[in-house]
Length: 218
Length: 167
Image (tube, rainbow over all chains, first blue to last red; front, side, top):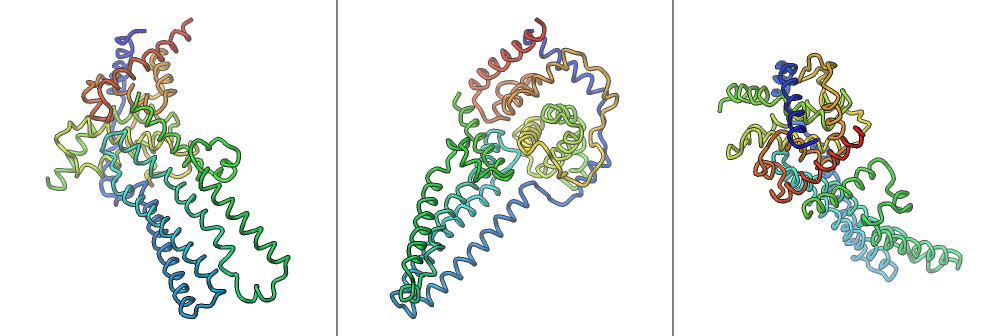
């Protein structure tokens, strides 16, 4: 089986197709009148909504922080610190979302195949970065409500429970943040957390990115 | 270019390259419904991009880039597709006598190509279409040396598959 034979076979296929293919002009005309729809358009809309919601959430928390600061007591430190941490983490996630929107804008199918595929795969795989970042905010949701009454009337049992929950959330979120990487995609815990079909496409994209890297280096 | 002139030029470009669109779609989708969908998506993306066509490249280079990009992205989506890319139900490219025998060797070649990883598949299609290394580099965004190395590797893979079948 030499090169010429392969090419001859393909040329034969070409000839056969030439005779048997016909265009449906009516359908093409219909396509020409369709409004812009792209596979990425709904994705972009979702990201824009996420950015808007993220900004609103951060603004709401900022207002609450300002109110808490205006009548600052020792016990409000917990709320202020927790809310500030959540704001910072949300802003970090918003930045990643904005980067993704910019990336969507840049994706053009008429560019080099490798470049376009790299951008598409980066776009999909960066979704995991947002999740990693947002996981970091989890411990702060276990501390913002600590108040004066808890200090005054809280039992030891309550404080043991509070400390356990906060410690577990802290350890888990740091661990997830540090370990959510492509190298761990085949681990059981990774598949458990990111096992749904939505995440499968993200992990596939991460694998494809690695493939593209290797392909360009070979 | 006026709108109707643009429409006509687009139609003639698609007419000239319908074989390429069909072969790419066929290499990335074996399922008839998916293939129909992929062809619609390719033609739609070509139309979307047509207004921005850069004449420093040949029409074929522009068309290969879009068709391969759309096909690879389409292929990488979940295999069980329930969503249709458009409301169009008929075929854009109609194949007469589709069931006519294409010959066992060609059938094997098509099967082996469809078993290649998606990027190798793109290279092999371009190679069989007798594109120059320069044009392949323009379409794919790889160096000519890299392309040459890969073509040799893929050809060897295909030859081994053919010889395994024949022995």
